[in-house]
Image (cartoon, rainbow, N blue to C red; front, side, top):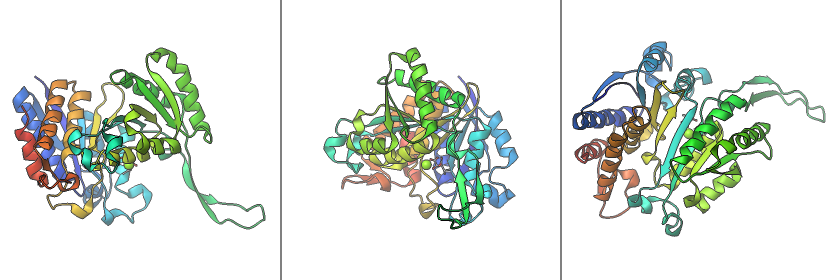
Length: 367
Ligand code: IPM
Ligand code: MG
């Protein structure tokens, strides 16, 4: 029986709806399995800008550091879109990732067989299932590299280019090693096949990724390692999605590929994520989808990605595998019974539920 303190950041848009329901799901797990979950609600993102002027108030980061894990909804919305880079809601996410040292982002893209028809891919491509784990580096690369504006100088013909903006992709051996090690160890609990996705035909940083991986591979001999350029990988993901097991990649490529992987599994509304740092540090759990301001407050959002993120929290932060499975099985059961939120409904016999009703169904299905 455990006692867990969870820092909860509902955030903006549909964030509060999906997060509140997920806390109810956790409380039900607590009742069934004899754990206590305490929630500490915190401000970050647009709502924090409105309340304090700062997308990530120091008090929020400090409280997250003290917690056993962080549950986050989503941040951002049109209201804050015109703010300069440093004061945008997204800054909260980057600040949390950096501040908590969350260098590894696990994004499983799993096609629930019940939702095969919701995938935009042809049936024969998805009939053997999709179960990809994207392991995205999260605190390095172009997201955190040197950036700025400068004078662009002259073209070869002596014409002034005007102002120039730049961002930098930089990766150190330490950063590459820890993410590749994690990805390869995770492959061991799966199909033992990892693909390093990069752009080594162009980028020096990608060439270092390959060098480091080659050096580490002997320690993980039992895992098959392949290298793939990101342009090819984005094509192969729609051409033969079932053949991927683990994808290990940089911050930017992981951002892009995880949206693609999400789409082919039917709906981004189903995809959970875990962001992990050094052992003993709190992990952060959030749905892959954004704040969806267009449907916020309408009881239309799909809560399953956030609920499944809570399952990842139980598994990765608290080592509560049975409890994690209990949530995943409940979600699967509800889908088998034909219940759907609007984004994943595609058959006439589907029963369409709102956010609250879907959450209740999941709670009732936890055994
Ligand atoms: C994600 C999001 C974020 C990212 C944005 C909102 C900063 O797209 O988590 O995938 O680019 O990492
Ligand atoms: Mg993204």
